[in-house]
Amino acid sequence: MVLLGLLAVQATPPVSRPDLSGTWVFDQAKTMQPGPDGRVVLAAMLGDEVTILQTGASLTLRILFNGEVIVAVYDLTGRESENLSPGDIKVTSRAQWLGDKLAIDSSSDGEESGRPVTIRTRRLIWIDEAGDLIVERSGTPASVVSPSRSVYRRTSNF
Image 1 (tube, rainbow, N blue to C red):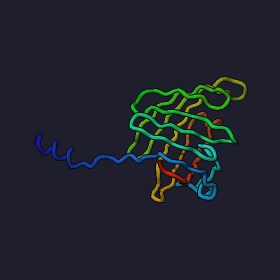
Image 2 (spheres, one colour):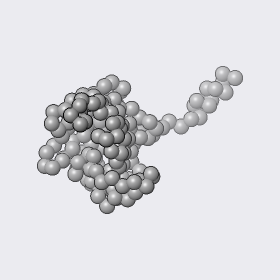
Image 3 (tube, rainbow, N blue to C red):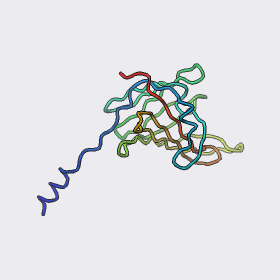
Image 4 (tube, rainbow, N blue to C red):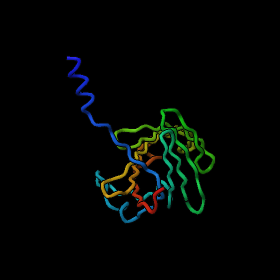
């Protein structure tokens, strides 16, 4: 019985985690196509261009947005990461692989109608069958975080 259990574990193929490394540019035309839920929300969540460096322990994003470079580093070992969003907003995140998708769960302090709120977001990042980088975002409060989806086309590999 134990031998069957061990064989079943060994027969399960390992989940391949895509290497997100490279330079990616926002693809407005593909982003305008409805997502699985039929909605279209035009948002370049990783800026106009993003350069990603992925190692076994971290994911570094160099986001080019409106002529500025924003750098965010996420720990891929399960530890929390802290980054600064534009406006010097401290964002605390935890990244984890969910199969072949990277989930980044983040929280930051914000404001809604003049009152302080905690903003929580989840970004799922993966490479689709066409080789495009897909970024989907959801979060709360819904009045501050609108669900959105961005598509990026790779322009170079490392």
